Image 1: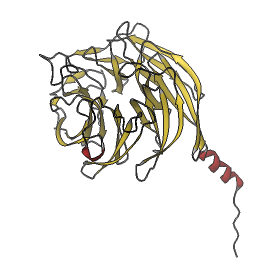
Image 2 (image 1 turned 90 degrees about the vertical axis):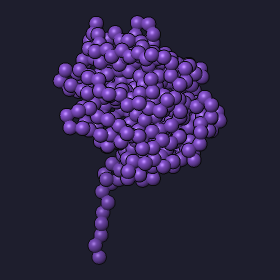
Image 3 (image 1 turned 180 degrees about the vertical axis):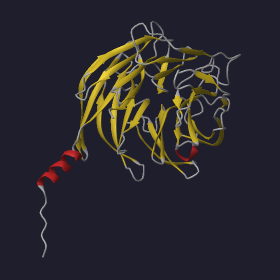
Image 4 (image 1 turned 90 degrees about the horizontal axis):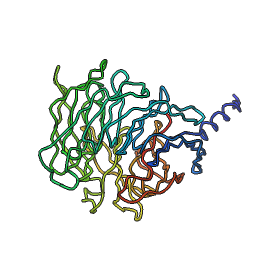
Length: 380
């Protein structure tokens, strides 16, 4: 009879992996970025604060370059606005390394080409670009300023163009910007060497949609989160030889169960994809009164979305959320209650599970104001 001996070292390594710590970065509208560590195992986890760093203005969005360990911050302020960069270390220490003058109301940014950063400016009706690294006294490489002839379908929110995000397509050759005010998806061709953006023909969204955020699914599909209609639109992507990319819409679905119309005051926040599942944050839907929700959808073979689940966001106004690379956890940033919530995620079914950690970050915000928690990303 054969006997087997279990190497104790293998067991120890396994236990260490189960209980391994993970780091996150969280920004707050007061001008502070926090480094956090999530530690624990099973259903028992704890969030602890490592360090903080002050950055210019009102940091609204963080893009994390994990290879070089640099965070790029947009500033949603209106005076003396500056985008900034922060270097990070594995022990959680952060250092402000660069900043540059910027148009006002920076709400989103993205890396593109061979070392460039694009920024969407909601209030300034513009997209600006920068050569990296950011240096003192640096200025925009290119600024695209937008106008429109009159107000849109929802005049109070569509008084002017309001680009709300910038996203690079999977080929790296195009950049798109959902424009909430103009009901457009703006499309640009990228020159990777110079960083120059060349405008293509825009894609018109249904009036009153208010496109805010987007996520690509492979090369052939892009999903658009619409803040004003509280819907997600599925678009087919076409790449004509030598020309600009183009879109065609094949589905529209609300971000609530059974395609239900959202309550007045609800605003879709972000959308993200992990494997064959799409997730959307619902701000002010009060599905778990006083808390809001995260909706999940399965993605069919042809890209069609099917509603799957709605879960508690663990606070109010979930402006931001991020799924870790392993796919087994989701970090939710609730803006108004200014808390980070960590929930489990089933990697097979895509279903979001129980809350395992919760931490207040800085001062709470006020409903419908640009304060409180603004963004969360995993350090990976």
